[in-house]
Length: 384
Ligand code: BGC
Image 1 (cartoon, rainbow, N blue to C red):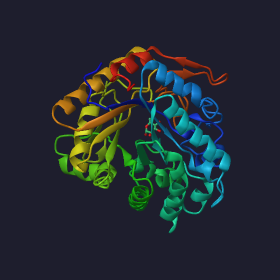
Image 2: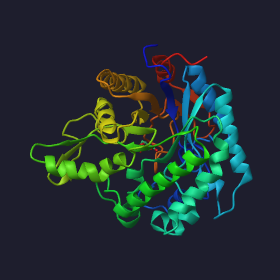
Image 3: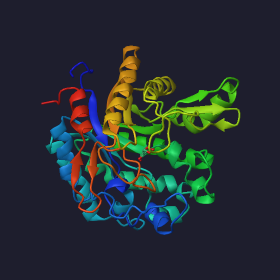
């Protein structure tokens, strides 16, 4: 298809911990080894992407994509405080070069849910020097970002900020609310990193990605819903005012009643994550994000956990239809990244498969699903 705006980004996304494997110096690895209630299954070797990233990028290119969103792993780069791993810096530099050499524009996420274990043990985002430590890491990776056009500072701060509740509580239904103080620290970290990047790497377009949950009030619950939506999402979108772009990550909608979020309606079709099948939520999400931030939108994640690849295509085509309608109504959308390139480690389980490509967990062989080439062909022509 060629009727996307010029320069429209067309890609798929992954994150380091979910794909690379053996991320032993991270906090998540320690949660997994301790068998905490929210991580029933450990990531182990994940899908072996640490050694297979070239092949993964080739799959994207061959399918017609022009963009790839992947993350750098802070825990590997700075495994102990202040000590940098030259080998890991070289590894990620090679990934950036490898993408550019293939004609794939990298959108680089600096932080995707995981931290170095030492950062977590020092108090995580609530430690007084947390923002400074993050900025020191950001400064360290600036030299890797030559040729990169866009950087996402922090993935889903509004979901990352539920970590204190996960660590404190026994399992409870639904997603806990973000911890306010953690959220405040993440907002400060984003603003500090943005200022640093603008000074040190002015060629970069800086943004962050927010989980846009499309809160819908049940009759009578409008005020509850508005407050909840602001606390869980709106304040993170507002923090993006003045950014170069806002990343929208949407999978489903969330109904809200007088007592808070509600489960999917009786009889609704559910995906493998137990979320309601609601592909058109993407249209609502980009409208909300554009209005709250006033900056261009990039869909940095959208997809479905399913073992039925026909359903993946149906979902994605409806989501793209709703996206096109929003764009026709004037919402400034600059790109779309599908979550995910690969079936991967879904934060505690391998079961919910979001990938355009399946990965054998023993041999790590990649098996592209029909949706990979289908989606590749839906985008703009690759820039020559
Ligand atoms: C995250 C991904 C995750 C996806 C599906 C987003 O919350 O950024 O890491 O795998 O949603 O759950």
